[in-house]
Image 1 (cartoon, rainbow, N blue to C red):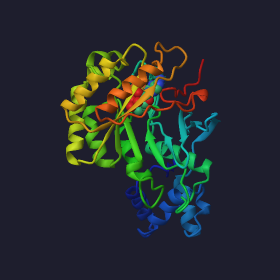
Image 2: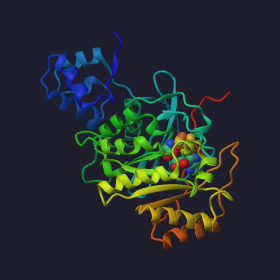
Image 3: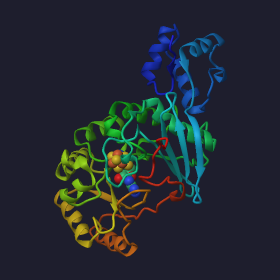
Image 4: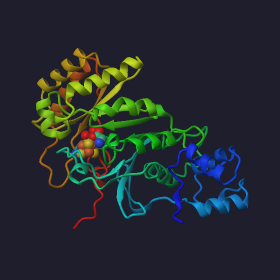
Length: 353
Ligand code: SAH
Ligand code: SF4
């Protein structure tokens, strides 16, 4: 009999399995805590479950982590793992530390079908979606590495945030992403608050609000251009869902809750989208649509073979000033982990050759 991967099953699914095994429903909470609060890696370690149940679990399920193929730590302490799943497919996961906290950047697909021109991942064709378990286990690998099982209660938690900004487009793998985010934010287990999880999308408009409703996480949109003309050049998906449609989805999201802010990610590409006119046009479309947002200006991270150059620092500053003056907070992101190709858009996992 083929065993089932236990990481990635919802509480409801686990309850059903336990029921089939003739176990009481409350066992699911114990099992869940072992898996996601204590982070044990063997059924044998689940000492408050009977020997008999542990054996039954072991017969039915596998409890593993993805294999760590390589692990690199950059000069600025950014940590990158190349992980391999049971079928040999690989993704990258990155931890970006700040002083007393940090975000784990997780992937949702092997490759990406969206083909954004500036993105290294986009140059690697989509191989497959990750399962919910594969999405969740990326965070678990990071927690293993930093020894944060069980989660500290009053001490600092270094792995405090999750950004779904690794390889792949999360809204092209909707079901598994929803399931994974609900496991990661479940208070009995890994318990990363929904407000500390941000999902970034290139703008698959019809899925945006349904996924946010079902997960409660925060929204980031990869905007990268103020006009459809420029955006379509950079991101082919803009031919299917244009800027006006994206902004309408943003309005729907904010109408439901006045405190919701959206992060617009904006890649600064020299001579393409980084002039003062572009900044003013951005301000205009956001004000016209009454969108509350902050910007994340991302310096372009070059990768071998790409056609773009990063904007000049003085242009980035001018651009940021215009947005700031118009009332849009606009931190310029500092590229992290560049020396190990761990920065935004540099992830790529295909075996070369
Ligand atoms: N597919 C999703 C999430 C992954 S991409 C999305 O597109 O939003 C995560 C972020 O990295 C996006 O904002 C993306 O536009 C940005 N990015 C891609 N290539 C980059 C590069 N070369 N330099 C800097 N950021 C890049
Ligand atoms: Fe895919 Fe996002 Fe890269 Fe575009 S930017 S190719 S959507 S991972």
